[in-house]
Length: 161
Image (tube, rainbow, N blue to C red):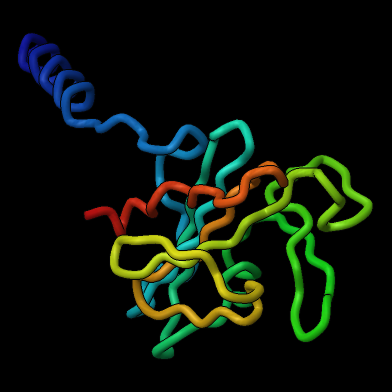
């Protein structure tokens, strides 16, 4: 009987080692999701200047969800300031560590992207102007001010094709 337990333990160990997939994200191995039982899900992807990135998901019942609600429910720390008709993001996930203004001249900033149908596009306005539908995502990438056309963050794993 003892040999059956030992053999079973070895099989379980092999299954765990061979069956687990490496993390696609340098920051988080699993997608943290709020309201997972909801019929629809939107995503937030944040990529730091270092290249490290994270992904969160927010479930919702309506046919769409606004950018402000997605950010608030994602659990990702962020700081924003009002401008004109909306808000701009100054800090996401503690980057930069300190700030006195959101877009200081010649300093890095958070570029905003929208993912739909497995491709990113630059956001036309601020995150409070965004409406997301099932499977779509907000993407944030901390970029150098000198970059004329910043690349988007990685695609959310649920939207990869």
